[in-house]
Length: 65
Image (cartoon, rainbow, N blue to C red; front, side, top):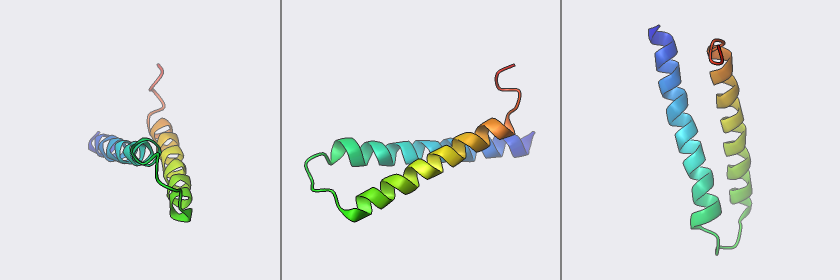
């Protein structure tokens, strides 16, 4: 359905953006001194990744059939 396709599109963009943010913090900026905002950003990013992955699996129960 259109709603499911729209959700998967939105979740795909969210997963891509959050993964890129984690990749950017951990690999592009390895020489900088970690700030408290880096820790907060990483924690929020991981929480959003987990929420998006859980929602993708809940929306598509026939994923592994």
